[in-house]
Length: 100
Image (cartoon, one colour):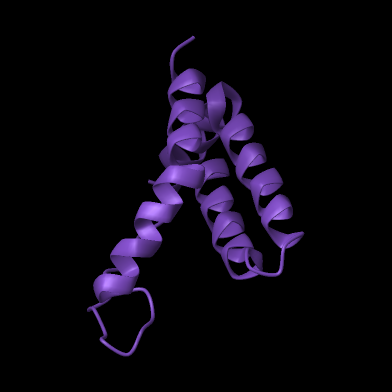
């Protein structure tokens, strides 16, 4: 299995993973330039690592915690702001990389 993951990761990296990961890294750097966006920069870099080398990684489910700021009405509002300001062009970028 490790050999298959290596082959899939290399194939992914050279057919679009490098470009998508690089855009996430640059996006994280742009977020780091602002005080407000700094906390999201580290999340963008974490997503970049998944974009570069996705196979063999595991996403772990976390139970919702009411004490976390990103849940509830505030979380919904923050997700809407994210969709308007950044989500749509990131999705379009991934689609453009996927379609040759």
